[in-house]
Length: 322
Image: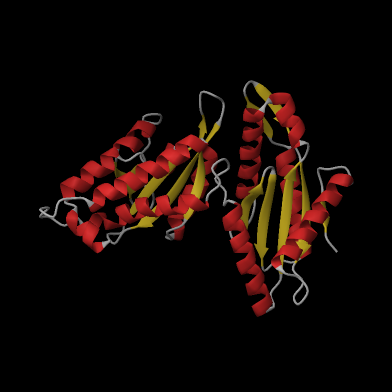
């Protein structure tokens, strides 16, 4: 990476930042806007009077951005941009990168469809090759731009672990995290629980309204899960209409309380897509890891059986595995 940074001049880096699809803005620690690239300027045109990063986004996202600025950590997070012309919810994968001069770099990449996700991967990989082919005749060193370049390349690598529809961790990643958490719970004898979440009557939604509406239902359920679990928990798409939540240092009673809240949030949220407005519910199975008895797959199987038990009891509820 040092060799790559040495090849890029200050002017080259400025031109690169103007042409990337990611929205990039330099802000103060409190979010005050300093400068931004063309992609961010295009989005900011919707709120021309905004002077702070938080003011550029929906009201419900302002607190999330404010908290991420306060934390001073380089964490990824997802915010909602709004609804596009096809009534689909648009999400943005974001990262805040603290800089040595006390400022913060905001990078955001819009995701909306599978094809766009693949296009972003191709675009970022092509951009990386272009960086590597930069002429050695470049005289000036853009050391202060190294962090931005690393952030863009890191996004390309991390996309392989993201579900293209919901932007949650995909099956491969969530299973790997489950295996790691089981090993950690076994080694340190700490409680660990999981929740298997399934959208009720999802086949009926697809058959009645079509797969585009079904996709929007899954995106909205994913958003509710992501937005209403603890910071230490992890939600991922396990497959189809099924999701998996990992709850480290958590006993089944606490996991059941969370399951009840998630059922309520999903039940009370209307999904709008293709001129349809519908409500959906979820069924949840909770299981706590049993040291010396469970493996990661037996734990998952117990939670899955508990979820089907919740469905047999009438759906829109949760069941704790024995």
